[in-house]
Length: 307
Image (cartoon, rainbow, N blue to C red):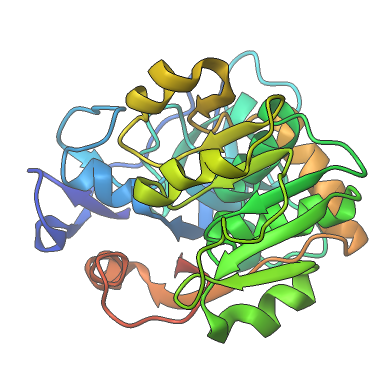
């Protein structure tokens, strides 16, 4: 089978397309005939050996995927060959940029019927991340308020939609060019971070959902009341803020599970949650996809490899 592999860590040009053996179904796992694989910033961290997961070489890049179950390992009863699924491969977030991928059964779910394979592959990690930030860590409820940084990004766009669906008032920071897009997703107030400091005039909010980090994360502490919380997924880990503010600051890595994906599937199929697929490329252009992650021009939304 064809796969995008790396034999050494480094820049995008270390990615090679190679013919390798197909994986065999292991206990608790399924082999997925991959139709599409999402491309994400954590893939580049793995490629450059700056990820907290620290997988061993050689490896196949990629975690997000959608496709059709090809075979199942022992102990797997919830999936069978022919099922259309989406999710991630494993806790190390590798193995998806390939024609066939070995995926942990507990980290995939049946694909939403209203989503194409491309759309489904764009969603798992970023949608689950947004869900966990809002409801498992910030524990927001209807009538509360959230400030979402990086709201037009892949995680941010899901956070805006999920918050609005839950009756949470959304303040969003983004560039002016993304304002109309964010309004369609449900943002109540949009702050152009290039023109204004969000903390000037913003009321105190129950939670800050941070996809930016740095000085923005530090300044965000000014808009939190005593009961407020800042939830971030931005590396490096904010140890300095955690030391100073204790449990008012939370850093975590997404935990993609069948249960969480099934919850999101209901929202996708009801039309309450929309995907944003950006640039679509064939597997052979995986190197170009990573150049886009590094700043090369591409369309807004998730970069996806189509197989």
